[in-house]
Length: 282
Image 1 (cartoon, rainbow, N blue to C red):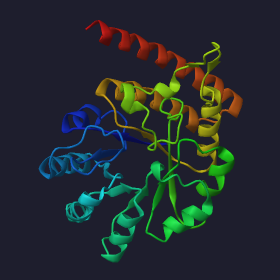
Image 2: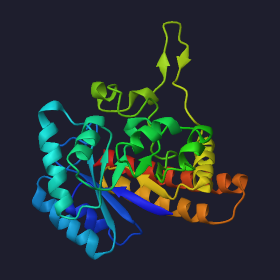
Image 3: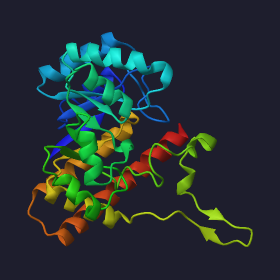
């Protein structure tokens, strides 16, 4: 399994460059990569330094260009063109107009369709293939039954998946504004009605996440993606992913894999909760 990790700075890169990551991805300031925003690289000079470090370690680097507002459209295309000339390995994108413009301008670069594009079927994948996509990040909410024709496509598109047991948005990721109210994912909280009934949004069980991940891998998905986050959280997520990756490469039956994967997940969850408690005391 290849592991792709989102980072927010050169310092992050140096922290993770020798920890089993095969691919990195970054965002650049003024080219928003996600609705809520994440840490972005401040300028092109730092991006070029990161490219040099990544390539000297025989790894790959991608840049996110997802949330392309109208006032930033031309700047986004220009920046992508500059990055291509400076040997960036690829671009993560969901905007159809960006894809059409790159094709029209004959800007040749490896393109990863963002999970935020919400491509759930092979006909949609075929459409994006026509726009030059080389790889798709599977949507977080996709089931194995939906994903199998996409992973086993006959049109040469690679696939990657999130470790959704650790990173999963209950609503369609990228189209939820609930976090803007409290700066937390309130969709995970219980809602109490006037007559004191408790309601929660439906979600996959952890075992269901791991069953999907197992089947995705068996079908041919060979890259696990870890989203950008605080460096300490990324360390937890990466270490968990490394363990899960080893399990996936073993010859375990699905029930054996799920049991071991859930045990690993629970151990890292306890460590994560302890870390969060320490943060609150600081």
